Length: 254
Length: 254
Image (cartoon, rainbow over all chains, first blue to last red; front, side, top):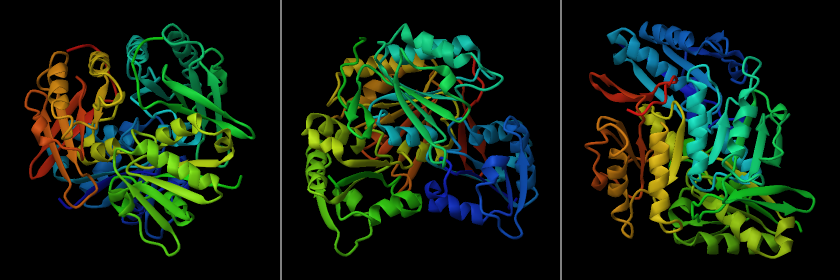
């Protein structure tokens, strides 16, 4: 079987974050699959078909792309950020594991990219400068109790926490509940960074505290970083503050 | 003050991972600072000075670069991977916080890159496909007890764990101790990925289990990913296995 499926990370929203590796993988594909707004970022190429689908249809998109590749084509699925972080690479593996054995002969390539938390952290300074975790607040595929237990464990052990999928129309209360939960573990003064649409023209980065963090300031395009007791803010006259987490840590609770 | 300091992520070892944003930032610098092997990756440019220093001299390197920028120059510090993940961005912020107030007027830019765990994950499949954390095993700047507590907390709560700085000549036993510790929390069959020099010519990716994981198979250039109970391996005839973590989770201990 000569088919090939590449799962490609476009990075955070602008062509200047698309690696040469990703550019080459995009150029080499006969067919592109993806969520419409991600496909829209890819320059149109003659002879390359496009298959847009909805944001919530990861499984169906992966299956369609695998079928297409199994027919002998060179297929690519595009992801925002990095395809391995709350994105399409895991969906492809899940479908491949459950699918026909012939799919295991396909050439599968995952092309990494700059994931949202790295882009937001870069804009703010170095809030991920020490041990950190990445946690999805979506309770579509895991119970909310699991999310709360992970928030407690991560914050209690001194990890900085990057929150993906913080809020959506269908999940309006989860972020507020997460902030509440973290206020039970971390000091009120803990720095919080909200990064919206980083890398796009309407990019917005806000630095606040855990006490003041407002869930209504976030939307689907927002990535949130909650600091640890080792996270500090440097105020700068005439410039946005720099947020960083010390490289040295005692790891003590506050 | 017109000085500028960019802290630039080169990604995992090959020019095909250097984003156009990073390329532009490198081209715009009058002076480059960094660990020698990272500087060696950057194409030489006429009129651009180079200041190599040792791997362990992050603080001194940051200070030298800040002084140079404060003299009005456009300066860049290069990092492997992403500068915000166990790299130079936090060191720059620490020195800036402790340094003369005039440094706060400098134009500081952090240019993100593909960090090692994303590159290793991409080679292996999608082991970071659900909640995960990144933890440095270096006990140079934090007590070993803190590291053990974080390993327990992360594994117990169901996070996949990416281990940075696993081993070095000066820290020979930490990785073995970490595997032992994790064996107390996770099933013996938990998938483990060891990725060495990913993105370089001598790249090597090994998939094993927590029971069989051998610390002697790792060195300073290795990034290790320890799965959760939701991490699975797909065997593929004639191809390396695919490792992925399910997007859905119960979050239960094994």
